[in-house]
Image (cartoon, rainbow, N blue to C red; front, side, top):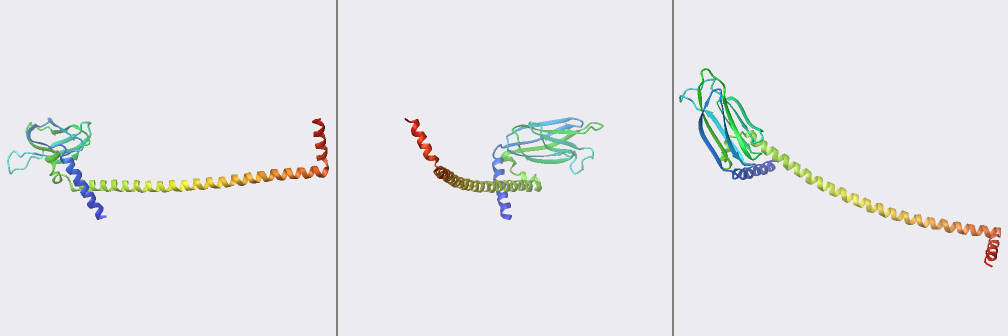
Length: 230
């Protein structure tokens, strides 16, 4: 069991290295977001590329906590509109996923309306491909374990299919043996049936000949046949 997990971990590592080298992209920025407004950022990401991001609200005064109203809602969607990340009313957060589609992915930030209006400064860093090699520091441990679990399930599925193929091959061989045995039995049965039919026909001819001889009808038959040929 432990060996299987180690193999799965190795496969995960190789897959991650392949994904990381597919699209080296980095976006690091700080932007202002007005309360009650929405701002979206798009990035072109290749399929099967690993991407990670982290965001946080910048404290206006260093050393002082943010107001309880200073919160943002973040949503990351794919080109087809699939939701890859959603966080509601957070001061900071992060996301990590493998792109299942190629195209422009969109990260949208929204701040709730406040009175009076104010501006929030947002630090946002978005990495893809090779630049996302430190994604394991962002992704949760449960996500890695889930990947290992999925790989283990895939390995078990492949093993089951492989065993099923051998079972089907064994069943096919048994079926071929049954067909050959049935054909041999049918040939033997047909031969004996033919022998029995010929034997019965010969016995019937012998019985008729003996019957006519006893009744002396056979001489009459030859005599009648002789007269017809004259």
